[in-house]
Amino acid sequence: MIFESRADAGRRLAGRLAHLRGQDVVVLGLPRGGVPVGFEVARTLAAPLDVMLVRKIGVPSQPELAMGAIAEGGVRVVNEEAIRLARVGQDDFARVEAREAVELERRGRLFRAGRPRVPLLGRAVVVVDDGIATGSTALAACRAVRAQGAARIVLAAPVAARDRVAWLRQEADDVVCVQTPETFFGVGEFYTDFAQTGDEEVVDLLRQAAGGIGRGADVEIPAPAPTHLEGRLTVPARPRGVVAFAHGSGSSRHSPRNRLVADTLVAAGFATLLFDLLTGDEEEDVGNVFDIGLLARRLLAATAWLRGEPSLAGAPVGWFGASTGAAAALWAAGEPGCGVAAIVSRGGRPDLARDRLAAVRAPTLLIVGGRDDRVLDLNEWARQRLTGCPNRLEIVPGATHLFTEPDALARVATFARDWFVDRMTIRRQARSA
Image 1 (tube, helix red, strand yellow):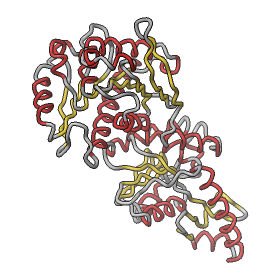
Image 2 (cartoon, rainbow, N blue to C red):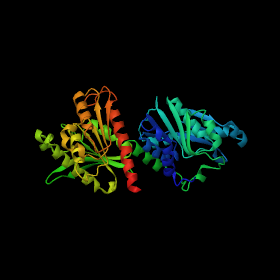
Image 3 (tube, one colour):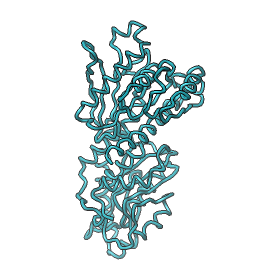
Image 4 (tube, rainbow, N blue to C red):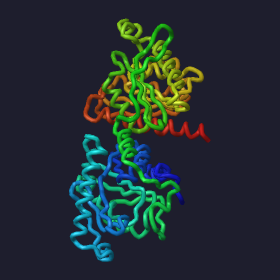
């Protein structure tokens, strides 16, 4: 099998790792070639992406042949057999090691741009490279990850020399590859495009994955004249879809709860639109706050505007609604031809859209706190009436209406991310078939 590019290899490798999605996973790319591969893996797993800084210590006369490796955290691997066969003395080895240590430090400053390392303690860590030949750098990376307290290490590469896989399993808990050929001359022979990955590409991919993904811009959304709605649109590279947020009563596009969910979705490759369903003056009238038909029309107007955005051409649209905003999303979803791909409701009031529930066709996820008794009853009632669409009710144990308890909102974000990944990805594939 020949991979078209590192991105193609990353998507194929991600398919072998899809069972890890939803777990507490961190993806670490080995710079530089492992980062574009790891970027695709992290997108599929909806996991954070970081680098594990490793430098090969190459034989002076043949730099591509590893006689050892170093990794951040002071990890050092020495291949005594390679040193003996290449007849490299201790002084020569020390000179190459010192040079690579300087480069290791330089790359750390450049690639992370002041960002802290993603914590690994107690987490599953997927270490990704674009290919494994001798395995020295991969081994050093696994040891460095273990030293930082990872609970489980999965070493992953599109291609690896077969005789290295068993050897590397002595350090990693699992080794996952798309192919492991017995005859192996070099990683590049398995790629159509194996051009060197530049520092700029690594920096850009890490920046995208770090939460400054894409561009976040203040926007004005035209509603029925003369109203304009204020919003914040964030578009990552190659968005897999876009999710519009419908806020509840007393909330706005600045809601820290919805912003946390939005950040999780952006990290998973979704564009997000956080916007105000009402203007400041309109919010002063409590009748507007509970005018679900009005809020639904505003959500439909924002969706129409999103579909006209060039950067989102053809992207499926999902809705995330909270409280009365969830009622507006369900009301709007009952409109014929609304075309929404998936809906998530957080602590929603679906009873306020009772007459529209049977007309909803979009897959709908209802998330409720286990201690939010009244709203839980309303959502259980509503689920029985969502007869025209796939639906599910997720209960966050111990959570109240605003999900302020430790880890409660993080669970909401995880549920929402996985729902949109599953439902909106399926929709996009169906369109392209």
